[in-house]
Amino acid sequence: MLATSSLREAVAALTEQVVADRRHFHRHPELGFQEHETAEFVAKRLRELGIETRTGVAGTGVVGLIRGGQPGKTVLLRADMDALPLHEATGAEYASKHDGVHHACGHDGHTAILLAVGRLLQERREALRGTVKLVFQPAEEGPGGAKPMIDAGVMREPDVDACFGLHITTNQPLGTLVVQPGAIQASSDEFDLTVVGVGGHGAAPQQTVDAVAVGAAIVAELQRIVSREVDPLEAAVVTVGSFHAGTKHNIIARTAELHGTIRALTSETRAFLAKRIAEIAAGVAEAARGRCEVVIREGYPVVVNDERMAAFARSVAETLAPAERVITARPIMGAEDMSYFLNAAPGCFIFLGARNEAKGFSAPHHSPLFDFDEDCLPLGVELLTSLALAYLERGATGGAA
Image 1 (cartoon, rainbow, N blue to C red):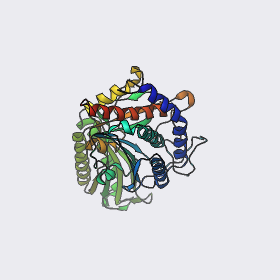
Image 2: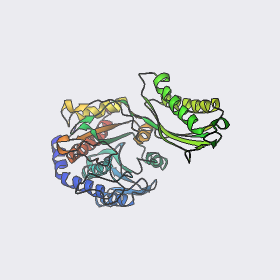
Image 3: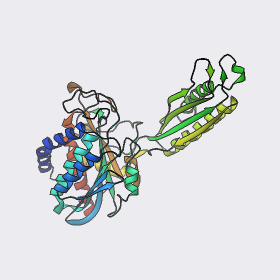
Image 4: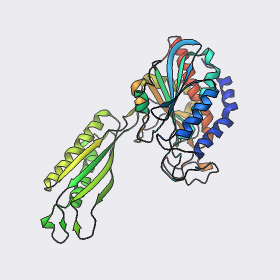
C-alpha cells in the first residue's frame, strides 16, 4: 500500500525545514483574517514547489492543488493558520515578536506540517491516482474561516470526496495519535442576556426592579439546565463568562448584561440548551417584574468523524505508530471549525500528541505558556501524507473506506 520506509526517510530529510518553518510562523503570529504574511509565505512556498495555488480565498485563505498523474478521487487536507490575542510568556528563543499575539494552540505546527506534506505529495504527483487539495485556513480561533472557504467553493472543482486534518495537543503524550469515530469536539454557541428592570436608590429597593438581583437569579437557574434537565450521560456546558451591571454603591442598576457560552456533543442537546436558556432567562426576569432580552448566536457545529473514514484513518495510523500509541480518548468540549469540512465531506480529524513534561511542554492550550514538543512534527507530516496516498490508492482500486 505505502512505501513506508522510503516515505519515512523523506520525512526525516525534511524535518529540519519543518521545524524552521514552524518557528518562523511562531515568531510572526497573526490573528484571524489578518494572516497576510503567513498566507504570503505559504503561497510562495507552494508556487516554488510548482503547486497550483489560489490565494485570497475567504480573505486570507490559501489553497494548493496537486493534480495526480492518473484520474481518481479528491482528498482535502486542512491546516489552520491563525494565532490568539495573548501575550506569550514561554521565554522560547523563537517566541512571538508581535506583542499580544501568540501561537498558543499549535496552528504554527499545523501550517508547517501541511507545507511539508505538500512537498512530499508534489514529488509523488505522477503516481497519484487523483487530486489533493491543501487548504490553509484562516480564523479558526474566531470568527471562523472554514465556512467562508466552503462558501467560496473550496469543496468544488474538483469535488472533494474525503477530508482529513490533525490538531497538535499537549493533552496527550508525545507520539500518541487519537483516532476515533463520532463526536470528538463540541459545538460552540454564545448567548447575550440583557436584563431590564427599574433603577433607583439603593436605600429604597421597594421602588425598583433590581437588575443585579434578577441577573444573579438567572445565573443560578441556568446551572439547573445541565444538572437537572440534560441526560446525565450527555455532555453539556452552560457557562456565564461575564456579568456587568451598576455604576455606584448606592444605585440599584436598571440593566445588567450577561454573556456566556454553550457547548454540546449532539445537535439535539445543542438545540435544547439554546431553547431552555432563552425560556429560563425570560421567565426569571418576568417573575421579578422585569424583562430579559435574549440573543443566541450559533457558532461551530459538533466535530463528528465519519465512522468508516475513522476506521480507515486508524488503519493507516497503525502502520506509522505502535498500536498502543493509536488510541481513543474522551471527547473534549472545545470547539473546532473543522466541523464544517467534516459536514461537507466524510473524513476524520486526528489529535497528535505533543506533551513532554521532561522538556517542559505541558502547559494547556490558550495559555501564555503554551508550547509543544517539536518532535511530534515528523509524525504529523508522515500521517497526513500517508492518509492522502492511501486514500487515493484505495479509491482508485475500489477499496476506499
